[in-house]
Image (cartoon, rainbow, N blue to C red; front, side):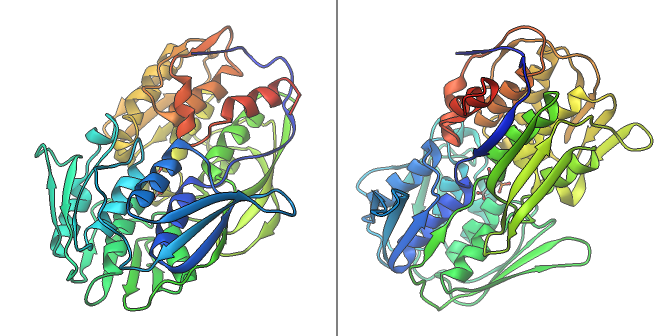
Length: 446
Ligand code: S3P
């Protein structure tokens, strides 16, 4: 348990957040499937990414951690064995709390000439896997949910003769899209995935950098398509991973909330399929500036943020909905916290996906914001926040969900009284040094 108090002074200075989680997972997986070695800098050292490393080591991939001799920068080297180099693991592949590891790796396992069992922690065993079982089965794989409930454990009998499909995904999900595309690397014929809105495209960008013939199309209505032509081997590359915008969001929020604050958050990934949080905050009146923009494969920038008074639109309301949702799905808990402090109503809709994250985030956000005194109600696909009531300290049950723990740690900075986060250690899923970094800013010792 961790105890937090209202911030007594502004947050000032600069901070680097750890590497992007989505990109880190992919760098290990695609590196493993490439011919030759890949060198990764900026990798996120966290429980989720370690789960991916552990699984690929179990399948015979050598992954080394070292420090670059000249400047001491940590570097990970993945010694890829090519598309057909994985070996059958001798025990169940355990993916911990990581949906990305579970779903993306299932796509790869669907094409292997061996059988595997894959499962994770209690949260993973509740998350829906039928969304990947359906398309991977259409491609020719044999996947069984061992308890028959569409969840893990999954028994995956790989099929080296998969066929490419055109799949219309009912949900905008990068994990679903990526799982299908990874199976598509091994399939006969093209694989095409249509989504109702374009989800994060790190898989497409990174596979392209590894040499794969893959591209995205965005239609005029904002729906997204990914197209993969298989047959080209992946070749090892160097990958420099930017800071995670989902982690940066907590410090952007903290600076917006605490009077007098000004922070610069360096080297943050701003891929447009991930940057919805910044746009929404700017529309709510937040003073956020992007400098040193670097348009590399994964664009990045330094973000300057100052304390701001948030506002709704002309009618005193602010709606977050539709195609925008996938671009800020992981930031909705911290957006809800920010919205609670503004004197306006925020309506979040089309976000039923929140129910199947590491916790049911509609329930966990509403439960904890209510405990802090906020007037908030849940809906079938989101929530309505009647902002403006002062927040008060409370005991927060994050339900072992890292994003809930971090969002409410930020809320505590403006809440009257003491806040205690009961299961604070879950931040290790994506940001092991979160509290150290937060306290450094709060105490002015960063
Ligand atoms: C992720 C995709 C998103 C996101 C998750 C990471 C990824 O999930 O919420 O934290 O790395 O592909 P969905 O694809 O299920 O929306």
